[in-house]
Length: 246
Image 1 (tube, rainbow, N blue to C red):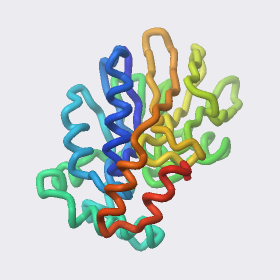
Image 2 (cartoon, one colour; image 1 turned 135 degrees about the horizontal axis):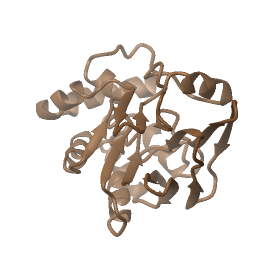
Image 3 (cartoon, rainbow, N blue to C red; image 1 turned 135 degrees about the vertical axis):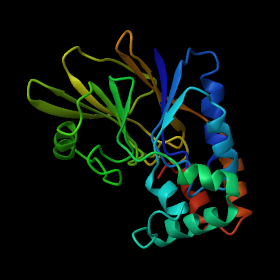
Image 4 (cartoon, helix red, strand yellow; image 1 turned 120 degrees about the vertical axis):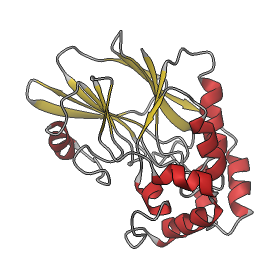
């Protein structure tokens, strides 16, 4: 089965549409979304509409989704992020607010061999940064593969022979053969707000039959996303950072 693995759209419709255009000629059987549909960007309703239309889909909530739904306080967010959440709460129509409020808490088991989560399998809001975090995360999963988001960095951790090693993905496309007997924690990067100084939208495709994973990046209309943000009451910094990939 071929899975599209994607995360952290954050209300960026142009980035999401670029990813969906890029995969049109690729075989995709199932979609795995790792959280944060909304927050930061100016098109939360349109993003949710597009994701709902995908069909065969498993998804979990992110910390921004929770905060927009009123399920978490914004006090832990920095002022710019908090302003984005407040604006999104006011802008989201009731139908999509109900949808965001009903998103599943992670971790979520998918098809017996895959776990998905937003932050970490032991805490949906925790950031996995480095091998020590990954070691703890592996102790909470039973599947060979776990996909996670939240950090906005494309990354792969592999556990084999009682060691854990992490790799930051820098060159795209990047195809990796997953080893039998090893276990993997994989972050596809962010669709709508990359933070690895590469502003292109990031996603991955997982071929479970052949145990192959491909990290991809795609250009999108950053100027249009910025224009939409600047036309609202969202903080201008949210537009500026898109072109920098930070």
